[in-house]
Length: 174
Image 1 (cartoon, rainbow, N blue to C red):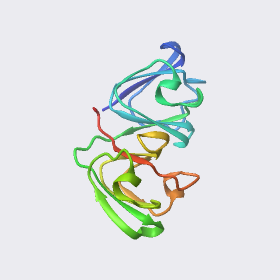
Image 2: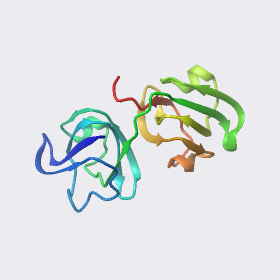
Image 3: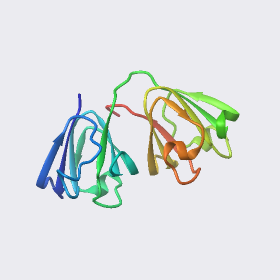
Image 4: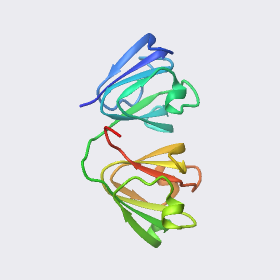
């Protein structure tokens, strides 16, 4: 079970809302989000209702302002609790629809291009666990949650383009 608290103002001030499960629309409870406290679990925050828009991965800790979680604004409209798993396995493919070279990995990768020498990565098959995909190497840039399932093209994981730089397992600790 997870617990996250959203605060309208920086430094854990102002109106707050406590959440312990997925929530598709936070707007009735907080009009903006400038700080967050994650008491337990791993969470994905979304800039728009219904788990859409920019995504931000947070694990246990305190985030006194939105820049601490790499947010671009104080807009957080939905959140998802990411289930804890002990096993992680993902297949990455060079081309859409699982074509081209394939590699299966079970650990974090700070630079997919350096490690696997693919020109591009265009599809994923998540076999176990949840993963956070980052646009740039070293876990920087836009983030996308990949839960078990099929991601045949970049639109399937919510991206606007095919830029893929790094990949990290969702763990409750680092």
